[in-house]
Length: 374
Ligand code: GLY
Image (cartoon, rainbow, N blue to C red):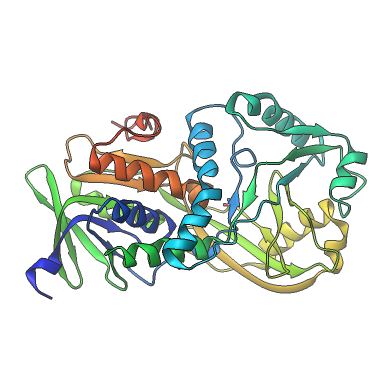
């Protein structure tokens, strides 16, 4: 590899949906990107993701995270068209909407809370009684205490979104080096100037850390203790002859009709380190909740199970942007349950941080200081 290949404007660590979105958005602006991935691209949390675009479903209190989620969700319809033109990949953007159901008073209270703040963010979350709920989604249990219709929470196929970002970024000149783990960040004084990998050292003006659950290890050498940790999600898929029209969710489980005809049922939330084994207990837990929402799930034909590791953190919001005192370093990690939802806005924000253009939203709640850490 000649010297020119060892240099880029931006090095992105991690080729999941977040790193790939950043590479795509930056490449569109003519920024040269080198993406380094420890394994194969998009094989961790992205591969396991259900693909929900649940700005309302996945938030429970007003604040900057809702704003970020709504802004990112709003980009998907147009992005699906642009990505198809730029990559030839159909990301299966599907406007199916979501139905949230209440199986008990606690779940009803959580849904009513969504109704109360949705309008402030330009969203609709409409409370509906059980009779109307069953008209909307006939497979639901008549024992439910009612629910909400969220007409704006849709879905995509996450691995295809990552593939589309990556394909388009490569067409625009980005380089992706898979199976190339970053061993450490290289510094010049206080500046992060590059990375050392198993395939030699690479240098750039900016290094973006988008390594999901694997991000913290690279920061310890800089004395930064990033509180990002893996949160295992188990899922299964099944064939339900009656199908579903909407994504259906309760507090701890969701069912999503996918274009391949299966129903995706997700997902547990377990802090079990980097262990990705599916367990009978985890799948049984999901199945019990799924069947309490949609009784016909008891007769659904099982297809497969899988797991993924979400990058969790105490505040359950991503780390985005520069690190004070460490020029050249940018964070884009810790998206927890919202990697797919937040990928477009993350790519756009990180690009503006590098070009110096106006940011679409205030990033300060998502910096280390915004997380109460600096
Ligand atoms: N976004 C859904 C999940 O992480 O399970």
